[in-house]
Amino acid sequence: MSRFSAETLPAAFYSDPSLYEAERRRIFARTWQLIGHEAQFTEAGAWLAVTVAGYPVIVVRGEDRIRAFHNVCRHRAGPLAPDGQGKCGGSLTCRYHGWRYALDGRLASARDFGPAEGFDPREYGLMALACETWRGFVFVNMDASAAPLASTIAPLAERARHMPIENFCPMQQVTHEIRCNWKTYVENYLEGYHVPMVHAALNAAIDASRYEAELRGEIVFHHAPPRAGTPVSGLWGWMWPCLGINVYANGLSMERMWPLDHARTRLDYLYFFPEDLPESQQIAAVSCSEVTTAEDIAITEAVQRNLDAGVYDRGRLSPKHEGAVALFQDLVTRTIHC
Image 1 (spheres, rainbow, N blue to C red):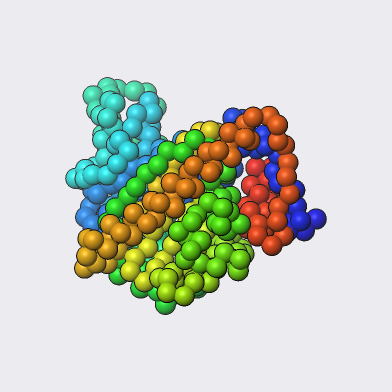
Image 2 (image 1 turned 90 degrees about the vertical axis):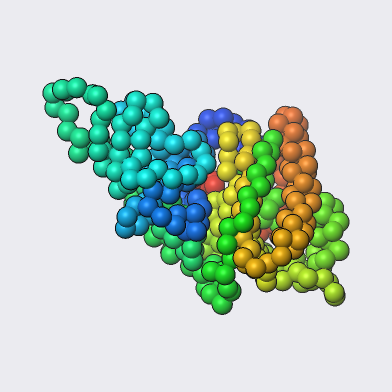
């Protein structure tokens, strides 16, 4: 069946806790996830810790390069750092029992451990993750056999090759906790069908009747002609499984749509602007974005309530407007059943 005439996923796909566990293992543990920006790792020992779909991750700059690890001590699973960012000097130290690791992940000291037969410190280094960068952005992948980041991001890299992305610096992060399944929010991001009904300001700025989604591998590009006199331009895209990318003339934003569990989503807006952009313009850009986000949160939470109500099972996808939603649903289904 063509994806453009497909039924939707059943409602249970958006509420089943056991399905979420499969998504963690088969989607989020096997895909490239945006963690931060090289500007956050300017010196050895600078670290950034986040939780990705329940997986604790820490990224740290060593003397030679940036590396990523599970934020899990090999002794008794203590954390090396709380979620956030900071500097640790020349080593990472477990906050539970004080085991100390070199910045390349080797166990440097098992504090006051005592003699232990058969204990080889070389076998207890941190669990490493794949870590790569694209134009300053730092991505990790928990799958050691994953294809290089370049193969996934290639359509985006080609489309953005002439954009001055390196001129933008990380300036602000805004986080929202949303009471909906992560897929509910991603699907809302992937279509413009709802724009005339939900986003009055955005609908006034673009011609939503000519809104199109272009599918390129595991990347989606959105196109919507601006109305006369409105400053809508740049690149608006999405990368499997949960990253929104918005590049404009005076800045960009990245949107991470990470699940907290089967019923809640953490939305992180990472804003990047030129260093010399007046603060007033930065505030205006963030405020405009937050208006649209508030509208999206309200409608996706309402949709989730209806998905959970037990009165709806399946619907149909619009051939004109929801091809990207169908692509996403196809990727989810194929991935969790592989």
